[in-house]
Length: 406
Image (cartoon, rainbow, N blue to C red; front, side):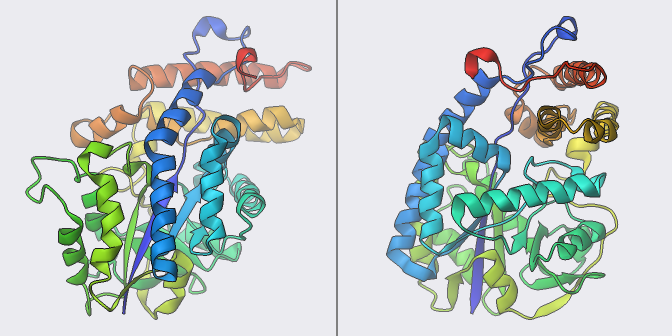
């Protein structure tokens, strides 16, 4: 038997507004809620609602033969509740089927695992509480922000009692080995590793509508054939991608919805294939080896490292300037200030500052709500300066929502 593990990331950040130097000390409202609202509604219409409807239909049709896994960041859940509750309702319907697993992650989709164990554990706890409250599940498996993984992060996940962790199937940590098996961290054998098959995942997530691709158009028949070719040469095929692949990154007119609707039928033409959740797949198969990496890997860009967020001097300055405030934020014990601090930790703020070129640069530009990475850096640092001033001034607090959007 060969299992297919479909995992989807669902995340929308709180984007900060065009915060000028002259706003410092005068404007305590940092977020662009008009833009955040518009994006949540747009992506909800193009992706979240139609794709969850398709998944509900597939589960109804195939019962327990078709299972999927999700992680929804805490900040995405907050925005769904406020601006598009129908989206959250559909995710709850998926949870109610019993065929969908929700994984744990950092609530604010942060890089805390790289710099602050206290923040990391707090945010994971917050996220687990939210998943339990909204979907009635206690997460058993963990995915770190953007699949960032290292020996230390695996140890952190193991310490929290998780049974499995997701990571990128980067060639440099697999060497000659296949991602289509279950592994375990070198120094944390209690937890199991599921590694993304990045070629097959990216065929859907990035190449599906690329007309110059030699395999275009990609049909469910063709793709199922690629999966079937793994029979006997792998235990589990991990297809990990942004949920926004369906309808947002790959538009409806590309045929992406029809592809998803038809794929299970084509896969099930081979009697030895099934779809499983992350935790079920992790425990069904024996571990075949260990994964060892001191240097973090991620699923971002060609490098599959941290360079999408910490690859230039602007990003590193912003990252360290933010976490230098942690001790003072903790000392204040002010819930509003703590919430602002954590919303500023969302990794997207650093992602927008990336200055890469070529294909990776095009991807970063697609996601960037600002005119340039330099604007993203300037606005973020201006917000940080205002926040720093308010931290040290008694009785003055920053805000998170513009009055007109309250």
